[in-house]
Length: 213
Image (tube, rainbow, N blue to C red; front, side):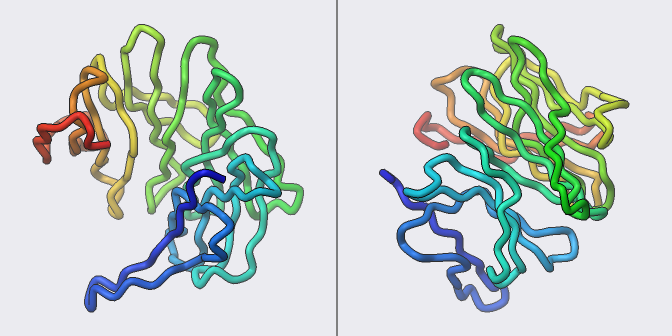
């Protein structure tokens, strides 16, 4: 593998960094905690399984379990309070959202989006509900942040503006969304915050370099 990514945990009270998972041969990306902080989910790839697949482990990195075993990449996993897992897959030129109930031993992968010429990606659950927030991008460059329930119904537009959105994070109280956005490909990515109803959009950073990614 060309690049190896390793996840770290930092104690904010002491600023001490601790590596979570490490064998120097495996790459881990997009690590996130479950709402109760007892589990972590992440994308994992190595020379044996070169495509990034989704894994889950205890918060200390033990008891690892593969959730997917796919021949294409799976990224940005997020767990809901009830044990639902959302992530996006990249198969060819199509990016879609996959939902799994980790309480179900069969771990059936449910493709909840499949729109031609439209990509859905970077999903995130709120920590206090099963509402899914995600990005929808179209070939014409029009991007959106949307929400929907875990049955892929009650789809709502949170914010819609031409440009590129990514890296959605929902606040712990479920009231605000943080995301990265740039209008043109050569613009720097900046961080924005918006209420979950789409109001009070605020730009938080003001980058000057397109190399900020």
